[in-house]
Image 1 (cartoon, rainbow, N blue to C red):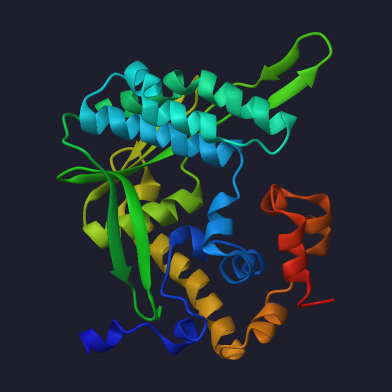
Image 2 (image 1 turned 120 degrees about the horizontal axis):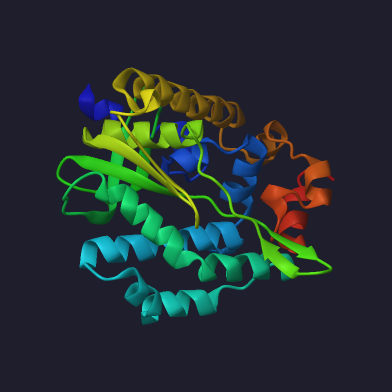
Length: 290
């Protein structure tokens, strides 16, 4: 029976899908259809903005500092980081300024993460550890990459970035932001998945350029076992809801498209999910409907 449970369900196979992830499961279904069935993997990976790209940059800086014992300033000066900075292509002037501010404040943000992690005591850290997890009745496995793992702890890094504003008197300014007093529920679901896969005690490190907050099982009810178990069950519900649509579509992309109708208003406004998406990619989606 255990081996049977580890067979990917036909509803996934018929669409060429192999696994899921926390970020994928939490997507609105119309966006999930677009990202997983309209865009190529390369196109999907290329859609970014200053917040996403800057977040990855901070993660790498912190991970390099912890796993290689390097000073943050030296990591930022390294060829790895400088190349990644140079490679970023902003969406527009505002996105360009936001990324510039993120880079300018990167050392402060990274140091705040490191101050959080120092509260956990001496640990030998590994970064980007790959894990898989089966959670029946979900008919596929979860694929995950955990930011930081030690012998008895695992954690994820969450960045809080401000926003640039153009003023007549001062030009572009950048807002400082505080970290939340309680972890975002989507992050709790993510850490619940990691905890289930590893059995390690979880933590969440939030940091901005001017603030920091560390959440552990000792100081946060949301990270205690009962809360994590509930969060994981609710994450599974998201995935099973998607499975139902895959089953109804039965391998037919046209049917799946109609089960995941997009928000045309959001597309026209270029709201969050559609910022940076090329018009030819949108046209490729819309051919299923018009």
